[in-house]
Length: 326
Image 1 (cartoon, helix red, strand yellow):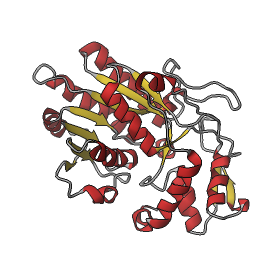
Image 2 (cartoon, one colour; image 1 turned 180 degrees about the vertical axis):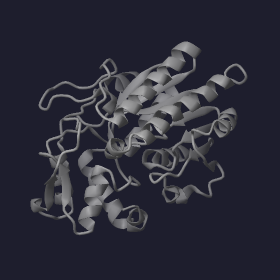
Image 3 (tube, one colour; image 1 turned 135 degrees about the horizontal axis):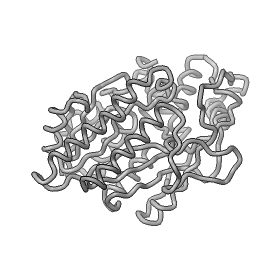
């Protein structure tokens, strides 16, 4: 089987490619990536020589290239996206182009191929941020029936893409699945993101920067568990269905994460610097992943505490990877 991965040089995409080639060595993976600032081929150096892996540098907005690659593949997993909320606030145009128009180009390529070739399943990687914000201290969680209520240009662009994918399924009968996943952490994550930013700042002798009062809550998932969830959906997910993927069973605040990082790095709490909050900052995310557990027998197996330590050690040992990105 030939699987087309978009955005495979990014954080989750590169981890997924490595996971897939290890778990499904009989398959061929084609990685289409534009190599923006968030795409890094050094994240895939260890598999460059794998004969079942092909890298294609290109943009998902390139209709001719996308048509060519879609015609050659059996299945598509669409990771490619602008994903940093802060960047979406200062420069939203790129998020509209990549996240909405890019998804549209892929869906159109699939629509054109329909009838000429066997159906090509399309899996879209989305986010829990499309559902907006939950109240701090509440027991409410996002589920597949939660209404959409995005609060940032980033989450609005992902919500738009979710709707496009569903519309193409309903209107054109394209075989699609969607996962809305919580915040990922792990190796090869760009140091602009919360956890690697804290780790690398501390390694540079700087303070940990935490927005506002630090009580914002995110649902954290180790990236390999996300890869396992996508695998489960690709193997057994129902056509047209959405699955929420999360990692936590209790709320953990950004301040709690900062304190854990400081603890594991042997540093004191006075290294935390509370900085001015960002606009439209969602207060709390929490994910109910009952559906994917009951229907596909998936659940996270990597704990936050253990794998946060492993992630810290990875950044300590791989300065040559993250240093050029800071």
